[in-house]
Length: 99
Image: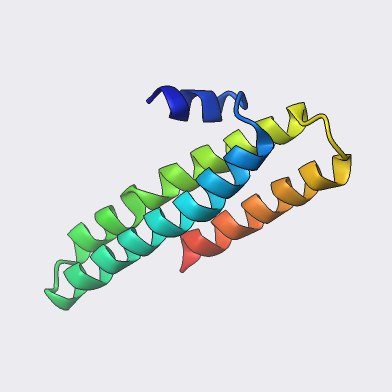
């Protein structure tokens, strides 16, 4: 929980927040929740599928988007890299959330 708290407050390095939490973590959480969703749908457990499919991924995607955004605001390198990370994370998390 300490790392998630640091992510939320933008205290992680932008590279860590973006690559580890948004890209790798985002793919892992969203693939796992999508697989669970499909598995539950196969057994006609629609309500459980929606809860599992979106109950894990949406809060994660929101928290990561906020964390990357805040880390980008503190980034001391070239501004364009911070902006690319912000845009890429928001677009990526939206796409992962609706699929």
